[in-house]
Length: 65
Picture 1 (cartoon, one colour):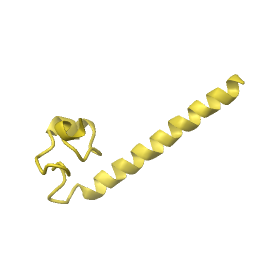
Picture 2 (cartoon, one colour):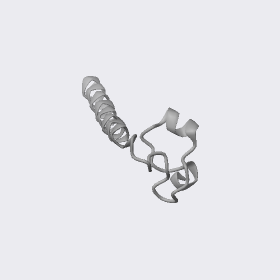
Picture 3 (cartoon, rainbow, N blue to C red):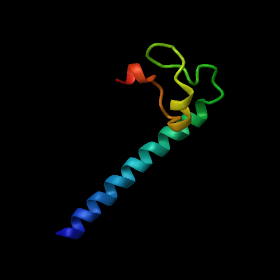
Picture 4 (cartoon, rainbow, N blue to C red):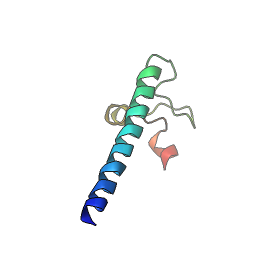
């Protein structure tokens, strides 16, 4: 039973990693777009610290909350 649980955890981790990789690839594709770094919801700039830590984010902290 423990191996099934470990296998489930590993599959969940791989799924999350694939999702994040897709998000990062999408961010790289948008990086030359003049609107990269602008919040998709409010249009305001996303804080540079947020983009440096999580470049895949498309919302500012206020809109993400």
